[in-house]
Image (cartoon, rainbow, N blue to C red):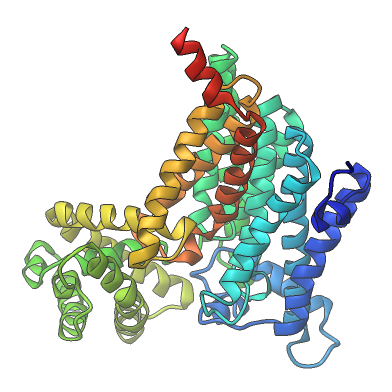
Length: 471
């Protein structure tokens, strides 16, 4: 009797190269459809990149400036539409490149490969509709518009380096890390991942000394290049070779959130102490601070997420900036440095006295970040997240122990490591909304699909183990 095939199997019953082209076509069609449907979406943070503010990392403003120059003869803000289409194409290619590499490396059947391709597309789809964002990141004028795609490409080449120690993949990984940390601060997690992988790979190969040399050279090259780009960008734009400012505002927001009014006594500088009290009193009066949160973990993380921007963007930033503009002469660079100096003084004066309070918020954020990496934070999905992580870890252990699945174990283990690193970094300085944890969501479900497929290939393995024990 002839075996029936599913519609998906009939659709992708093509040669490997043709399947690769089909996958790329599906990915391009998906992201370009929403670029046409939604156009370029301006968000709250978009003006900071468009106007090339000193507080922003250089790469994304430079990208926008390049498109602005390229399409200068077109009317209005057409260049932003071109950026949205560029980002959509980049996201489509990055998604396809990662999935196609995994398919070839793990020799996945086309049905499973098709399912893995659907995972990042589904994440983008849910971001557009379930999260009620009214847009995808791929067509939003935000650093995520390129950072998510670059992260997927980085992961693809980092995986290749871990599996084959390819010099080309190491070089491409390093270049992508340089671009990403020049785009947004959060992407320093990719530098940490690269360093850790270089170290582990060379220890496994018993080439520790060589690994340390490569590690140091890569780190120095990446960080040094990022600093040079930052300073060169500001010199060309502002005539002053300085780095971007306002990096410490995230930490200062945490300092205010976890502080009490009496903490002002720890600030020796009278000027900074007065500013601290002015910001604190507004935040306290409006219920922005941690002591105003309700009881229980869910209430705490919800309160922190709801009022984080109220502290930083609505209160702290405007008050400190206005004070500096009113009391200090100089241009954007000098005033930016003074704002940073005030925030640094608050941080080192107040935070050591609230270490346990900050640590409590950190652990709350870690748990929240683990949930938002795989789902959405609510009572039902919190339990779903718990069980899906348990299933993932059990599958990972199984793939490690069963011969022939070493590459899958490396992929799944690297993904879990990336999730832990990203959630930890984000939890230290900001709240874990999906915007900051979405980078690994598609990867998580890709790994889950592949590991479940590996288990299905070993039908009867439980019976064989049980039978062996009974002999």
